Every structure is written in C-alpha cells, then in structure tokens.
Length: 395
Image (cartoon, rainbow, N blue to C red; front, side):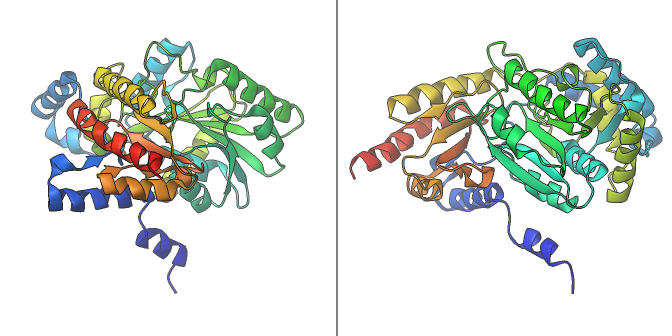
C-alpha cells in the first residue's frame, strides 16, 4: 500500500487553493471583473525594474554554461557571502557564508529547518493564527504542531500561554511576523518576552530553537519595526523568501540563516545541509541565486498595498465590520458576522466575494482578505462588502 497520508494531502487542496480554483471557474462563467477574489497572497505589484535589468545582464553578459549550471548544494559561495554580509550590515551581526543555505523559497526553508531539528515526537509551538502548511511541514518532519492562541483582538503572542504550552518534548517555537493571515507585526516587547521564556528553559537544560518565518519582513507600513530575531535570541534560525519583497513568488528563491551565536551553530548548519540533501532541496535555482546577490536591499513598491489597506479598513469599519488593522504583509483579518466563519465565507460567495475562512489558520470567527490586488478591484468590491453586511442586519 502506498503512503495514505500523502494520498490524503494530494487529494485535497488547501482551503486557500480550493477557493482560488473556485474563483478561476467563477470568473470564466461571469467575467473576471465581476468576481472579487481575495483568496491568494500573490503580489500584484511588479518586480522592481532593477530585477529585470539585472536578469538581462546576467543572461546576456554571463557565461551561459555557468549561468544555468549547478551551484554548490547549499548555494553559490559568493551569493551566500553576499546574503550574510547584507544581514550583518543591517542588523549588526557576524554571519558568514557558512551560516546561509539558499533554498527554493520559504516553504523549502521551513521544511528543511524542521527536518534538521526535529526527532520523532518533538513538538513545535506556533501562534494562532498561523499559515496552515506549518502543520503539514511539522508532521512530515515527524513532529507535532502545538497552536497557542494569540491575544484576543490584537493577535500578539500570549507569552503566558506559550510558557504553559512548553513540555519536555518542545523543540522549537515557530513565529511569523509580519503575520499571515493577520498582518500583525509582533512588538519588540512581545519578542523580548518570548525570548525570556525560552532562555529560562535553556537555563534549566532544555534548548528550544526559535524559527522566524520572514517572507513579509519588508512589507510594513508607517515605519513599524520588525524585530530581527537573531538580535534577541541566540538559538534562532531565520527562514526567508524573496517572493513578496521582490514580487517573485513563482521563482522560488530564499534562504535559511543559522545564528552563529548559538552554541552548536556548526552542527545545526550541518543538519540543515543534511536535511536539504535528504529532501532533494539542493542547488536552488542558479539564475535567481545570481540575481539575488545583485539586488539585495531592493524591494517592490508597496505603496499600493498601503493604499488598499487604508481603503478597505475605512470602508469595512463604516459598514460595521470589526477588523484588525494590519501593520504589515498584505492581509486583513476581518471578524465574520456570524460565529461560523466557514458559513460566513460561503455566504460571501453570494456576493462574489472570495474570502478565506480563518478556521484553516487555527482561529474561529474571522476571515482573511488578501488585498494584494488592484486598487480598482478594491473599490469595485466595496458595494459587495456593504451588501453582505446589510444582509445580516436584515435578519
């Protein structure tokens, strides 16, 4: 018999992907302009012009054999050094190329990291709401995902609840800030509180790794600070993707950064390399490795996301919705107008609004609105949001 867990995962798409596929079908039926698809976190702004320019240079000026040839398994040395130097310059750290592992995006970064750290039965704590694939990645690595609810209303980490959730099997805490799906940025105070708890565990002889999933680091509004986890906790690993910052989700390029300050950094990095080898995640796309080294520090124009956020927040609040105003990413967390968010999201389809129920994110009573869409669509969708709200008032 073949692996039935894999059959199950392959037979049923994620809730987000299912809604996206429904949207494609609905657009074909009634016209794209009549469907308000807020399902997928697919950047709507183009990659910076420098990305295109540098790609052209690499393709036209570089040796075609080297451009498309294999790099080292963990990534080209010069690229890894460039990434390490960039982190050091921006966050006053001391990483080397041998703390960096180039990957096929954040999913590969997380999968490799979890397989590197976990033994069978180990537990990984995360904060709800959380990206649903965390559970898939953790279980595939032999672990168990423990979801701790964020603070009501703000979805900041509940430090006391996290502390209470720690057991002798806890191997890691996995955080995501700016957060998908809420857009919340964890405060410096929250990060310090979490690190204090983990440091107390280490003093008692239990090392708990802190994994920071950071594909949205650059997507923040109003100068909000995103604490860089390596500056707060030694036993930390950063999983990064350029998908959102450079609007390159389909190119699958990112990295793992292992904090050189951790006591067993060399062993952890070796485990990362070993997990990458075992999973077949070696030699990330060489063309885009070379690109990344040339455009570090560049980011797409996120002003459209800020505009979309402000329009949505203002309008939805005026219609009677409760929203968690996001400081980052391109997601809005909206309280559903009935306790069952699945039923609310289904009802929204009657108004051609495609909203993701938060049950798949580990939270009841909310939906996620991905506002990485055109501002025109945002404006055209507002009457539908109002009509949806009015339909509940009429009950």
